[in-house]
Figure: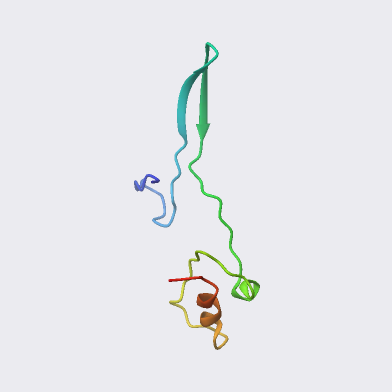
Length: 81
């Protein structure tokens, strides 16, 4: 879970990501690693999703759609709610 601390001078919409570090021994050598806790993701338009079957999806249905039925197409691409 990323740290959600708020820092002075930072916009509330900015998400801070802190690097994780660790140390281990490999064949008698002291080694260390540093990585960022990121998750691979991608985004597509509803038009590109036509014909796809998705296991999970995140949609913003709060805004008014500019084409009738666009929200239905987006929701119908997911296997189950």
